[in-house]
Image 1 (cartoon, rainbow, N blue to C red):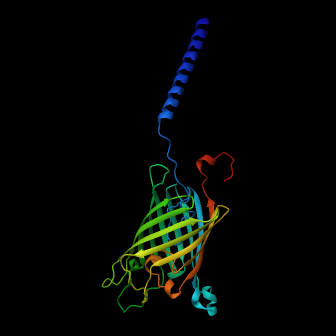
Image 2: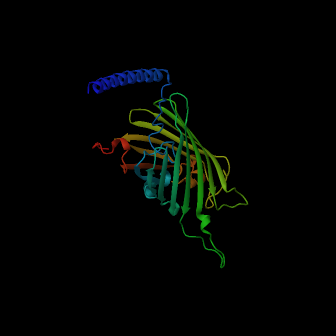
Image 3: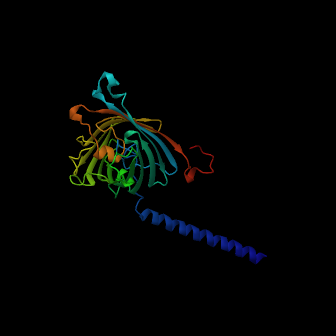
Length: 308
């Protein structure tokens, strides 16, 4: 019994020394190891700058019910209540599947259009090392307006209604107040007059945010079309989309107000089918508003009784 007792005490002492040595070794390694990179957050305060996507994603398990509204032309006159009598709306549901993957569905009154998208965050800006945040955004839209009248025997393929958009979103947060994004974009229209235009409209989007107070930021966004700049839409000339806005943070949510020459609310419409021009006074007032719900709590909050 005495031998067993002495053996136990000896083993305990040896183990204590071993753990102490291991702890010292780990401390030495930690001191010599490079510090963990700090990921830059909140490059933008919403998942859209104004009309176009930003590099921001919803958190995992978060559902965003989003309403986007664009009124008619401000120069429509008192008869149309300065555009308020002629408005378009998009209602959407966006969901964060993981921290880097987000999807969404929506329906727009403009052209009775259904759309869906996916956004994937590929790189994150860090205080040391990675200088940018990089994301991919892809969408598909289905125009559900009635098919045109055709001669007997002719058909209207469903594929004529479809368009696809692919974007690379490259953003940098230069300071707490200033962020900038550039968005190389290709919009593919299945139906165009192929004798005059390409099915692919190539554009470059630029956008930015300047924070002017703790809760208010000025935003801007412009899409320049490299190809199909002279493409007609329903017989009307088209223009590059230019938008200016204000972001107002309210209790963790962002209320966006803007002025834009684009009444359409999907990628295909505001990038390649904007028929109004700032120079002609054809400007639309609008807003984006959303309500966020946490559907799945993050792991660190599960079974803790903590509210989220």
